[in-house]
Amino acid sequence: MSKKKVVISGVNSGIGYATALVFAKEGYVVYGVDLSSEVNPSLALKIKTLGSVLNYASCDVSDNEQVAAYFDRLNIEINVLVNNAGILGPRIKTEEYPKDAFDSIIDVNVKGVFYMTKHGLPHLKKQGGSSIVNVASVAGLVGMSNHIAYSASKHAVVGMTKTLALEYAKVGIRVNAVCPGFTDTSMVENAHLEIDYINGLKYSTPMKRFGEAEEIAAGIFYLASSNASFITGQCLTIDGGLTAQ
Image (cartoon, rainbow, N blue to C red):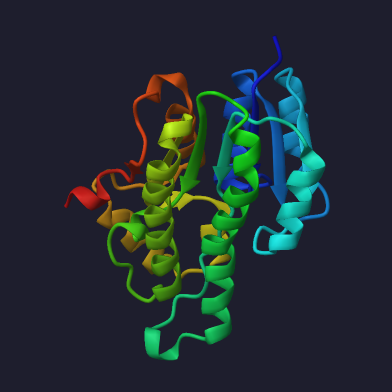
């Protein structure tokens, strides 16, 4: 019996990294893409230690031609697609928000999900009971001051998730999303946010801490697994109670 296969975007760090390890631990063959020309060596080593295989490729998910070429080369049936790649962008008031930054965020966070899904679907449709899990955000459920592009992009991911679920339920493909709250990843580190702002984010979360990438990855695996076989079109919020307030 052949092993199940998962494709994960943004695999080299953060939630993508943690998700790759969860699927590898469960016996999946992992296919990962990221912008870097080389795989994160620590990820490759950990997956090898788990007895699984990581097949890595450099791919810009915001480039339709690159994504199409990636799936053409892949030429396999896949069980799960995890659309994780995303960028946060600057924290700036809307009237001062740079157009180039807005466009870049939409290109990666929205078009990237569209391109990966569009070109991945023919590979998923060959498998019965396959699944797509999109990484959205609580910013796709509520507003996020000074992050107009990021919030818009994640609202779009939520909308695409529901639409795809309706379109592909009849062929046995489930489509869901996770909506993480503030999570301790390199994306947050690279945003160079002020320490007072970061502490404020933690204080605003009822559990008084950031989530861990592994906690988000656990939710992703659950939605992709047979334990969620009657769940589609849903957004699993993993936010320490933030949106319950």
